[in-house]
Amino acid sequence: MGRVFIVDLEGKVYSCIHCKTNLTKDQDIMSKSFKIRGGQAYLFREVVNVSTGNKEDRMMITGLHTVTDIFCVGCGLNVGWKYVSQTFLYQKYKEGKSVLELYKIVGPHDSNDLVCQQVSQLMIQ
Image (cartoon, rainbow, N blue to C red):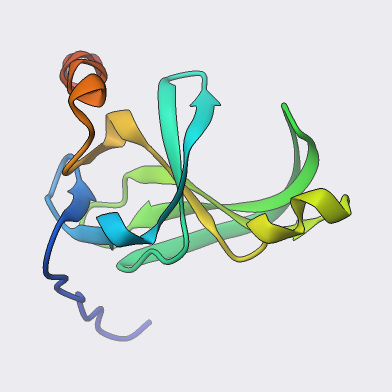
């Protein structure tokens, strides 16, 4: 494996909660309505500075999806997952998009999300 180059982002940025490595920008949010076991999550068009795990089929609220977990390249924290392929046509818009779990990232969340983020920081410590 070669050297990892970190991409620095500008503007309103979301970063890894542990090492503060930039992951994505506010303008790349596609949806804020994702719910996970740990709380809330956002769907993003593009995410940088992550590595991917193995593909697997995972049953989710919206059905069976082929996904891969994504990990921060700075510290290795599992920050969410990326959709690889979809079975249902109405879910195809998710292919190639990534979900980041809010309790694993820091950034310009809405004011309602700040409480969730603060509670999540306590959970992860």
